[in-house]
Amino acid sequence: MLSLTVILQLCIVLGALWVGSRYGSLALGVISGIGLAILVFGFQMKPGTPPTDVIYIIIAAVTCAGIMQASGGMDWLLQIAEKLLRKHPQRITFLAPLCTFFLTVLVGTGHVVYTLMPIICDIALKKGISPERPCAVASIASQVGITCSPIAAAVVAFVSISNANGFAVTIPQVLMITIPACITGLLAASAASYKRGLDLDKDPVFLAKLKDPEQYNYIYGESATILDKKISQSSKKAVYIFLGAIIAIVIFAAFPQLLPTYESGRLKMNIVIQIVMITAAALMIIFCKADPKKAVAGTVWQSGMVAVVAIYGIAWLADTYFSNYITEIQVMLEGIVSQYPWSIALVFFLVSVLINSQGAVVVSMLPLAYKLGIPGAVLLGVLPSVYGYFFIPNYPSDIATVNFDRSGTTVIGKYLLNHSFMMPGLVATVTSLAVGLLMIQLF
Image 1 (cartoon, helix red, strand yellow):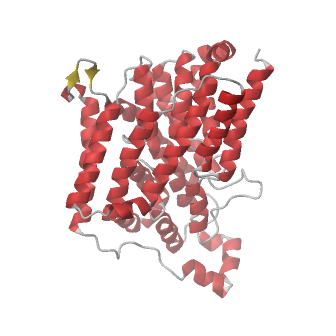
Image 2 (spheres, helix red, strand yellow):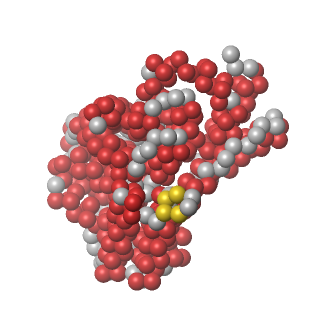
């Protein structure tokens, strides 16, 4: 049985996370500091270890991606996606999520897709398709891609923590499980959304809006596109440098014998990623006319720095609590996790709902999972469960998607949980988990 003090301290941890989530953005990480201060100074608990390795990797990766955005390279990637979607508008419910998914896989953050969302809505409107169908799944897909990106904090942290706990796994091996599992989940979510709701010409609510000239002009008056943007050769060159950096990271991870070896051992992948990313960023500044000031003002760099603060505060707070009570937690949970090791997915999912960061879930909860004796292969299979923050629709990408949908079909319901993202999010997550667990059994 847990003592009253242990329960009280857990309430402090959860309370700090809940208050932080109300304010959002930087506040989630900063307000975690209040909980940390109460535990350390009020209850004399030994502070845990801040996740500095993961933070350094995020800084290097988002700096590189931000520099590419500043060079105009991101616009070129978005243009390629828009051309594909406009060429096959009837398949937008399937193609839009795949586009947002692969953009996130490339860049390591889901915040790159905001420019594409109005385009997805525009194409659906012109085809008479309810924009809720592609938009909701595309928003989900933009976050699902994080566990499939070789430079995302969640993937790098999983590899680093797993290796430290005796499960020797590389980034390519993680992606060999997560990418097929998550794509299968997204295809299932797209199939479930394909006939969702009514077509626009049969939707009485939408048709009633069109009778108002102002509403009609708002919905159909403008056409969202970035195809008219001129892409320079230097912008394309920046994309090639960025893709080259990602390929180099994957090669080093797949063939560690290529890395230098010292008396203390082989060069670790967290250092490799940082070196490759900042080198690529420097090359883009020198050869691709990328303006560092524009990078700092861009959405990619800013969202990445917010993630740094969030992971810093949340993971440090969680590690402080769990490291002090690991024995008690093991006694309490060992029966459940030994019989049903996959049940840790429910813990990952619930924590994600609370803290809105997949990287923070991995950094704060994966060490606990290993200490509970859960096999590394099972933890790899359930890795997609670290995305659960679609459950309460307060994440920026979901809110932005609702605002981008001029038809009003993508909604946050009156009762909060009856929103457009719930069904595709649950379908994608459950299917990805099932496929991930099946794949680790087979391979």
